[in-house]
Amino acid sequence: MQSRLDVIVADLLALNTFIATHSDFGEIIEKVMQVAAKTAVADGYFFYEITPDKYMTLVYSDVKSLSKRLNGMDNALFYETKSLSEIRQKSSKRPAELCALGHEIINAENIYHNSTIDTTFISGFDKKYNYTTVSTLVIPLVDRKHNVIGVAQFINALDHNGRVIGFSQEIQNAVVSICRLLTLTLERKGLREAYSSLLESVIEVLARAIDAKSPYTNSHCQKVPIIARLLATAAVEEDEGPLKDFEMDDDEWYSLHIASWLHDCGKVTTPDYIADKASKLETINNRIHEIRNRFEILRRDAHINYLQKRLNNMDTKENLQLEYAKNVKKLEDDFAFVANCNVGDIELNDADLQRLDNISRKTFTRYFNRMLGLSWTERNAVQKVEEYTRPGPEPLLQDRPDHVGEEFNRGELYNLKIRKGTINQEERNKINDHVRVTIEMLKALYFTQDLKNVVEYAGCHHERIDGNGYPNQLKGDEMSVPAKIMAIADIFEALTANDHSYKEPKKLSKVLRIMQNMKNTGHIDPDLYQVFLNHGVYREYAESYMDPNQVDEIVVENYL
Image (tube, rainbow, N blue to C red; front, side, top):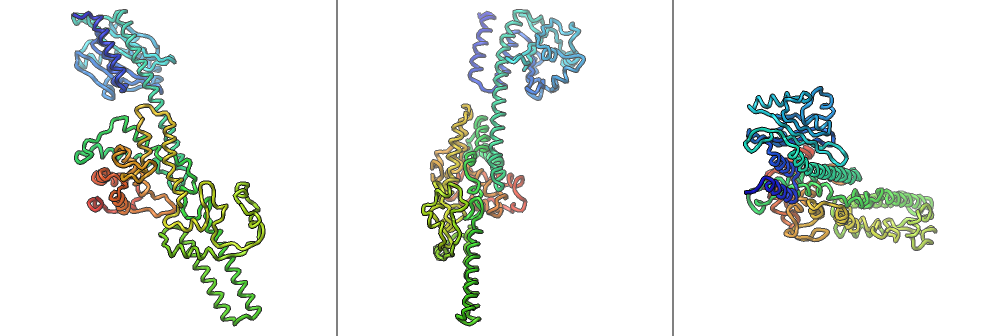
């Protein structure tokens, strides 16, 4: 037969294994309290936690003979959360309160015999549950900075016959030793919570900074987490089809939360004028005005030419006026065409590109030195300085050597000839590169083992199911479900956004039609897209975050 000491040693060894193999601090605290109560042969225990902002809360309570065991908020029945400052002002204090304020152990053989202790609650408890509280042992949990971070209270030590006795000094010493494990656990819990709070605050600051870079995407990083959470919840609730067995543990939920906030952190390296490029000629400003001035010059030249011909009587007034009007009309039509191409609303065809080439061959005469007023980097980009310093003809639409830098081509004709949209290939590469930068930035951060999936989730939001995405051309079966959720969340937010200057807000029906096409062409996961529709994720988000004018009637079957 095992001795009591052998039982205690076995319990401690089992407790040590439990602490080493469990990450839930609540479970660890409760287990330590159970072992401490068993070691003390106490009929009941109460565990109070004191938060960093100095609030005292009863977290666990268990009285065996009453079969009354409560966790969390249920303990408000016994003890309402109070601040230490509020407790300090009370004229009389409960045992746990005295312990928390005095940092001293209270070991009362009979709690009612101690006149310095408020026993009102204890007597009320005893009366309500037909119980008799006698002996009480209250232990403060003091961290390395000498702050009380918790209180462990045990009641009614029992002898081998089940009679209530006092807590001996030997038992007190043993329980204090076990409670040191509570102190260590609370310190670890505090460090984990502080790390999480710091991590979340840094993440939110970074995400808001990315959004604030652009007045046209000023909430993207804040809204993608909402969509990701809604879709992930729907996927977990799915009870049929390929996703019926999909589950997410706490670590995966938290990883998805962080990844969705940080998925665009690489955009800190993307120049604003590219991310917000509303027209083809836009850099820091829209260079269409420079081209318009050249057309103004040609119009003025045409007027001068007309007047000179009139003065020299080279033709009749009517013919010259007709010729002048025709030239002006041609210039106006050509500029309107160039300006329309610059906006990028229509896709250019081969005839449009040829017309741009023809317009670019028109010239005007420059008289002023082009080298004046340039920065040193602009001067270094000019190869034939003499051509820039002396007067000479220049094309109406220009692709000059100094337009081409290490990364970008700012040639006017080159950019105007973008067939669709406003972004040229180099700029698109730079925008796409934000995912690679995101992955590198996140890999450089120290994430604990439970957050190991953050990089994958965040780094896959531009991958495609068919393997034609970027940056790693992953196929559907090479990505986790949360990673594919990120892709849908990112797309849906971008399509529904109503704060872009370069596009009119889309109706919900048009957004879903686009996403249906993306599903059919191997862009997004078809199973998740079906959950997105069938569980009404699109509708829940639209009702809360989209402009009501965008939300039209949706018949789900039409978009599956």
